Length: 159
Image (cartoon, rainbow, N blue to C red):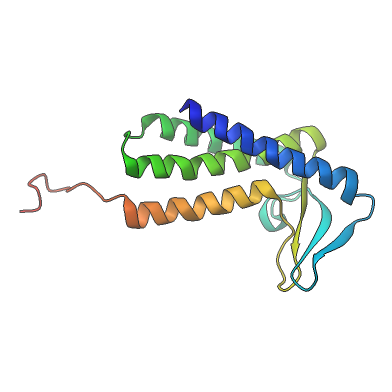
C-alpha cells in the first residue's frame, strides 16, 4: 500500500508541475500549437468536472473526490495480494493520483488547470490528472473483465 501512495504522490506532483508550467508560460499567451493539426496547448480554467459538468459546484466535486479516494484506499487495503489484484491496485493508483491532482487545483485555485487540446477532433481540453483517471479507469475495466476471474459461486469446483 505504501508503494501505491508514493506512486500516486509522485504522479500528482508531476501533474502539478505541468500545471505550474501551464500557469506561468501558457496562461499569458492562451494557446500555442504543439503538433499542427493534431494537438495544441490551450490554457483553460475548468470550474466543473469532466466535460464541464457540475460547473461551479466546487464543494460537491471536493466531497465526491474525497469519497472516491477513500473508497479506492479502502479497496486497495482489502485486496488479495495476488498478481491479478496487483494489476488492479496499479490501475486504482492512477485514478487516485488523478483525483488528488485535480483536488489540489480546486482547493488552491478554485478551478482545475487544463491545457492539452486535440485539434483534429472536438474534445474537451484536459490535463495529466485527467489522463491518469482515464487510463486507470480503462485499465481497471479491462482487468476486471479479462483478468480477474470470479470464484466458483457454487462451492463445488464447477462440478
